[in-house]
Length: 137
Ligand code: HEC
Ligand code: HEC
Ligand code: HEC
Image (cartoon, rainbow, N blue to C red; front, side, top):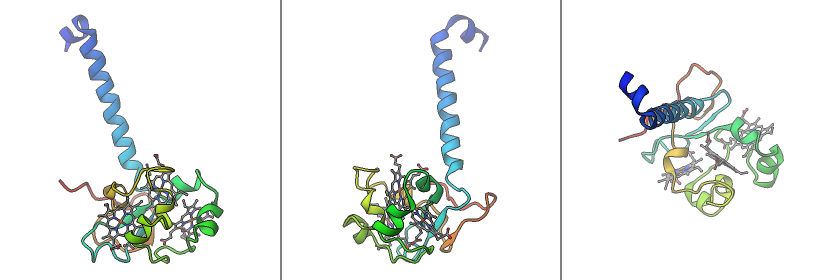
């Protein structure tokens, strides 16, 4: 390490930026299970998918309530919207934005289906609860 610091600034820089990169990954990972996240699991478990997790606050700071709850017709109830992938691919619900245009598109299954299998539909009220399962290998 001494040798690296003294003699090889470039490897040091690489090491530092790697460390920073990894720190950021951790931060993004832990940010996934936040107060107010909504777990939607009407169909996922039965279909062998991990439950969908909707980060409400992440979206609320980016869009007006009206965009989703009036224009897109989301009812104010966790699990209350009978969302299916056909509808999403058709541009309804999450698919109004997750279409590769306003936001990344539906191929990114794991970004939405990130809940622990078996987690019931709910509004996540506690920052201590762990809702997110590690990605399947
Ligand atoms: C933008 C978010 C999002 C993405 C991306 C996404 N889904 Fe979904 N998906 C949902 C939501 C929300 C539901 C409703 C969850 C529930 O009620 O269980 C759902 C439901 C499902 C269901 C059960 C209902 C049905 O339509 O059969 C399956 C199976 C499914 N998704 C598979 C997938 C697969 C496979 C992919 C990747 C090709 C994918 N999803 C990508 C949000 C997403
Ligand atoms: C990007 C879309 C989007 C925006 C913007 C949005 N919501 Fe939601 N909201 C949802 C979805 C999706 C659900 C869960 C519906 C489901 O599970 O089927 C939800 C659920 C809710 C619920 C019921 C669950 C709970 O937390 O009690 C309330 C209340 C709510 N939203 C209020 C608001 C308010 C107030 C705003 C604006 C400050 C807002 N929402 C902005 C998409 C959105
Ligand atoms: C009104 C538009 C809109 C709707 C509707 C919407 N999203 Fe998003 N969503 C976005 C945008 C924009 C981003 C940020 C995309 C980016 O960073 O490239 C995002 C990001 C996300 C993320 C990643 C959050 C993070 O921490 O990076 C998840 C997970 C997600 N959406 C799930 C959903 C699910 C599930 C639904 C439906 C229940 C949904 N979204 C509906 C616009 C929307």
